[in-house]
Amino acid sequence: MRKVRANLLKLLGLIAVLVLVAVGCGGGGTSGKADLSGAEITVGSKEFTEQLVLGQIAILVLENAGATVEDQTRLAGSVAARQALESGEIDTYWDYTGTGWITYLGHTQPIDGSQKQYEAVAKEDLKKNDIKWLPPAPANNTYVLAVREEVYDDLGVKELSDFEQLIKENPEEASLCAATEFLNRDDGLPGLEEAYGFEFPSDQLVKIELGLIPEAVDQGERCNFGEVFATDARIEGLDLKVIEDDKSFFPVYNPALNVRKQVYEDYPEIEKIFAPVSEKLTTETLLNLNAQVDVEGQLPEDVAEQWLSENGFI
Image 1: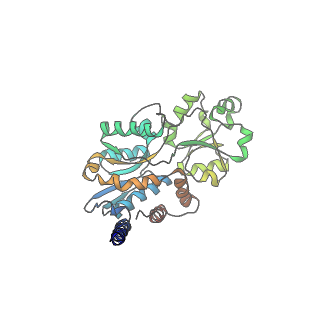
Image 2: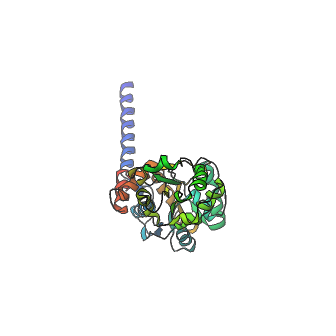
Image 3: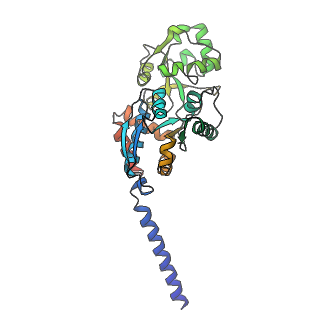
């Protein structure tokens, strides 16, 4: 009798395991966790490669959950994307915690620690602007200044503090390629110059489209240095050298999905849907995804779809 009872318990245990496996395998990606049928959501993004990939990730994940999605990606910079979100032109897009804290909320100093920075941004932006920040990805797409390897030793700028001597002794060599946004942001060039106590010669500042900067730095004809994102795969692909931010001026820039409060309240399951996606977006992952677009020439939508499929999200 004991033997029969033991065997029966084993059988019941096996059945329970099989049921759990069946439930786990039958979800159809993230859409198995929530149903957004009937939802109409407009997704935006900024215009650079990483944002285009993240925008397509958002579109595909929402569509997979049953939502009808309008693509409004490729907006012209942070200010345009943010204004589109606040006005309701778009409902959601990925932005960065450092950008939110400095550029949108108007603070001049970042908060130490990624989690504390996120919590501060999320709390204040929701209260002031009805913008909900979903939990951030671990990736950090901070600003860096880069220089081509061939002149790295000759120019002697290995830390940002070293610019002071170069500007003083050889100002004509302190040429910097940067996008308009970086040249005007508090967490861009103006704040950097104030924090480090030097100022680039105005005639050595070259305003250039963001996506063209790595190649311009590599060619060395228009500028020796350039503003680049830390997750830009062309840093390695072009053998550029990153200059150390020895005073830790640049904030942490963890990407997080921003959602209008009303949309979030209507569809709170969005947070559940994107949680596992966000967790997978490490710095290494974004470097790889960006490389597929910028180095290999693939389309952002194809890169996004392949990554989501490989990870079981769609």
